[in-house]
Image (cartoon, rainbow, N blue to C red; front, top):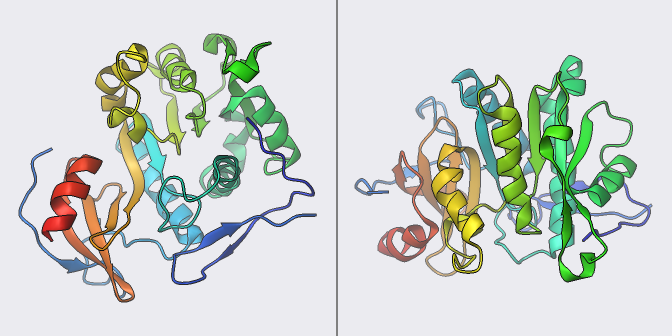
Length: 302
């Protein structure tokens, strides 16, 4: 699965072409009526919960941090953060999978540096998809840090055929763990099933918190995995995903009627379109609309 980056070092973040920033690796339900509002520029007259579309990844990480802190203060226990890593206006598939996951790893480290107080670092456990990812993380983005690194699955003898060995999540958790951050659990379909197990065995009915970071959960929500072949995964859309609070989210839509679905907790869900140098809010609502609704209904009608 993993993507070795020779002579790895931290990425640079550049703004090129008005795309809102690019990560570059270096070697060594029902809708309300439409209304329009500008969401960039002077925010002084905006309502208190109106976050603008980020101009770069540094601003994005700060927004995600503040959204997560607000949700935790409100008693939310199971959170989702989702955004593209191949450029703020990119869509799934614009970047190679391994590079996107490495980009997520780097941004998770930056998020943790801002979000996790030093005294709580040893009580924060980050779960990567598999054991090999932990090794890579310790040698690169997370070298020398106090955060606890762990894994959801480990390769088996039949790894080349997509098989992994199940890890009992109760055995991975320590009594002093307070927060779990699950990193991009989407490469193997079994990873999200293990995430649900972690939630049930170590988070539910406790004071612990869990954040799923770039899990591409829209694949499950949209029925990307046929229920006939993946019944357990399809069941998550009814049992597990409704428990999530999506605190930070960006999904872009390309084309002449393209735009973005954006949310920064505790604000509403917004459908945006870029006009000149600003993003215009075409529509907003309290509940998350489906990607199909945004693509086929909201954006074409605006």
